[in-house]
Image 1 (tube, rainbow, N blue to C red):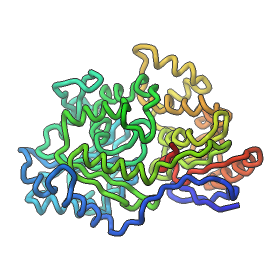
Image 2 (cartoon, rainbow, N blue to C red; image 1 turned 60 degrees about the horizontal axis):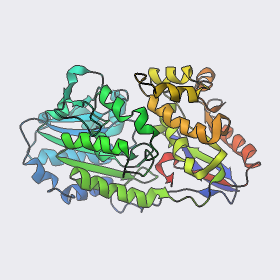
Image 3 (tube, one colour; image 1 turned 90 degrees about the vertical axis):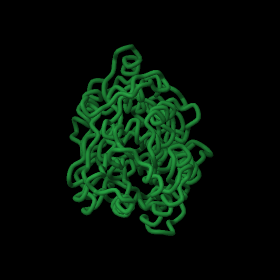
Image 4 (cartoon, rainbow, N blue to C red; image 1 turned 120 degrees about the horizontal axis):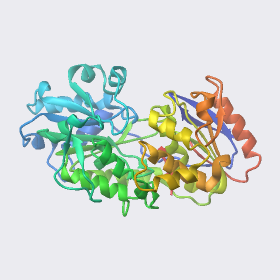
Length: 432
């Protein structure tokens, strides 16, 4: 047996797996510079754009708006954002003319404690910080033209009226949009509910090209890019993280060339080919902050699907310290528990839409391939009643005992499996 560490919440668990278990692991090079230095090098030598300082000199009337990811993304902003904000100040932009805008998309607003943890005390206490609110009509502005799909588009007013837009984001494999980062910080990150509704439509998600590492022909990618092109950033910064959450790469500059370079890097380092689908796959949900809700944990067991055979078994686990997810999502899961085929038929009918339904639609891909009996989920963070409503084979662990519960389950399932694969990084390393 070999011992393999997996992230679970804010800590790690070590699982004993068969010696012949196939491990899918990313292959990022060890960072040669501190995060702040890696970022500084990128913004001083960007792709398709002059350096940040020269680009700032051409700003329009209005504040400099720095768009950042929300608390569900583990970007170590505290390691480099103070230096980046200092660069903006050194370009002659006063602090009171600079705003940090959190691209929450449909996620909840940040808390003061999260802002301090994410950005560091200096930035959290020294700058105006605003959460995007997709449901606040007065904070949104409609764009004059439609999106690629012909939809109406409304974006954050602060972003739209900015004199300079600096967009940052994490680039990783994304089970819907191919890769995150770049255009996705604008749509869905800064979009209205109705814009996001179209971006996450049932028709878009039913397409086979809605998948990890697929950009060409991906309807979500095309939609998001069309929106971002209508209200383009003046400068972008795409971050790539290694398994230790260090900045392994920074790609700055114009929207599309910087994002394309980052996606290419991630494709090479974190997308692994499948030689043969396994009987049993074990995957984390990426650890904190991604596994804080079951909603986000779905990414782990959907992303690993190419590595498991039809009718096989997946063991997934997450801390779920913040519960199932939004009230709408929790209600949806309860309503359609055990009836996922009926749910798919329901959302394909015109006019039926519930916020966050897209996550259950992706979840259904796992149910279609391995069934609810083959989809195991272990947590110590949910009430038993909630866990029973999630269309998984749930295993409720005692507080602090989730790792032991996962090991017992793995030991039992390994005995009936001829091949085993594992994803210690969860959805941050994906099979193709």
